[in-house]
Image 1 (spheres, rainbow, N blue to C red):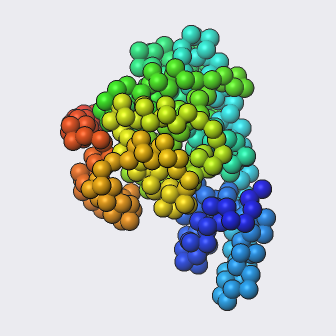
Image 2: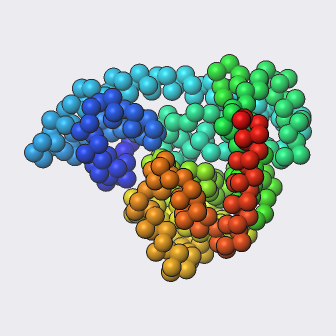
Image 3: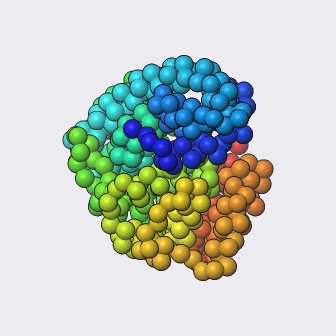
Length: 347
């Protein structure tokens, strides 16, 4: 049950101006940031109305949202419930197929976060199942999934280190790197696979690995600020889950991405007053100049600026998420090479 004072309520209170837009625009915003089911829960619990009761102009807004959004969000929840059932079945079938083939793998990202962080998998929508395997097992993984009834469904804009499969409405993304490999000094896949745990017939990552993914995937792939659910995930994790923070610091330092981890923590802290442990703050914090520079970028919403000025964001923000300039140059070289290969394949 969501109660008064939770960070979810703070989000929606701060978004009052947006919530005054036409209901279709509000619905699209909530879906884009994957906040739709959290907002539905708050409305059904009466938290939206109680928060705005007695405030001039806000009572009518709460009543309008209740009248115009509850039914569309309920319909969306029913669709997402069906999709979740298909994804869970697909995850179980894929994990068994890979186990039977002797392929080490781990399911990570969205599929496990709903229950872990929100107590309900539908409160944290996701579109697919993400599974990580060693690059050396790519061909065997492909064969095992085909034998289990999956069909390869590669996407034109997909990164070179992943491929999609589909089975009976369940989308499965197979990765052999958790992030673009040139962004890290060391391979991260062995760490993810070495710290996996069996649960309900599938392999999930240990809590420290889950938290590492919560920091790195938005920072590296989504320019930190693409979806509001991502910093909320970080906030929820730190408030609810016990994990080995020293291990997270150690891996991020080895990867040259301590700054990326700190930036994601800072983004969450600025939005939700996230209680960042001193171990993480002191172990990941960059120098004073870089902190000031990255905070200025967070003020500007880098994911939004990227839509108009992608190279400006890459050069002045994303590359500075690396701990050393040599790491940034390595990542830049990989990005240029990837763009060149993509143009040759998709002219």
